[in-house]
Length: 211
Ligand code: AP5
Image 1 (cartoon, protein in one colour):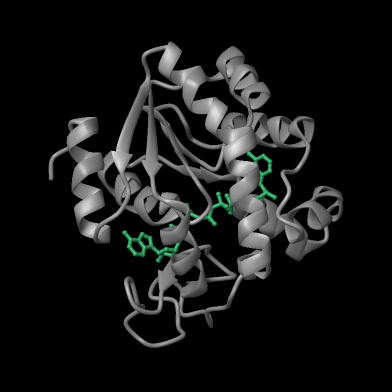
Image 2 (cartoon, rainbow, N blue to C red):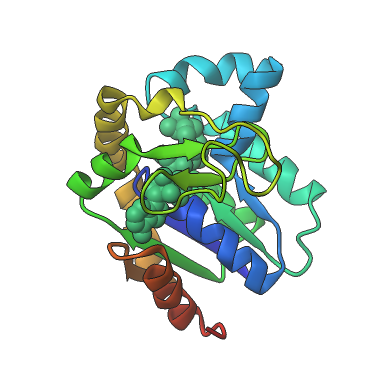
């Protein structure tokens, strides 16, 4: 299954992608994680993307479309893929339709005020990209990634002012992507407020996966 996870920044896409990946056994392509890796490594993509990401703006479509196209070709996506954070503009969705149209699109619906609270407690692993929350989804050992043992950190773009900017961009540029997939009868909207486990179950039901 080729699945897209849509949702505002902090809606829980990365958190839920891990459960769906375990169930479907397909790779996750997270454009945010790929870009953060590129920035950390100082590649030419990273140098171009850094300024956009730090200020909460979207990286230009042509850079992201080329990146996803390359990753889809190089990953083992024969049995499917989960796209987390792509597409985020109608132009990206239209491009994707030409080389890897999705089978299903899940949109996590979370009000802005809940997002702002979630972002203040987020901790992320700079090495493997895993996401935690100090209260709602803590790691087993405080400040340490369960998966790879790396010290957890706080993302630069989780600064409250940048979060508000990212939410504005989401409403302006990414919400229209929902209409794009709704018109194609592929959109499944999932209430994204509740515990991580409750939301996992809602998504699994929508996708017909075993709970
Ligand atoms: P990206 O990394 O994709 O950020 P995002 O979409 O803004 O999403 P986040 O990773 O912030 O949140 P999430 O929905 O994955 O939530 P999470 O599971 O972590 O992109 C970063 C930047 O890269 C962009 O701003 C842009 O500049 C650039 N970029 C990326 N893709 C691009 C594209 N396609 N085009 C152009 N530019 C692009 O959860 C958030 C927190 O809440 C965590 O702490 C988590 O533990 C907690 N949490 C999760 N679920 C729950 C729950 N049910 N209850 C309580 N807490 C919860």
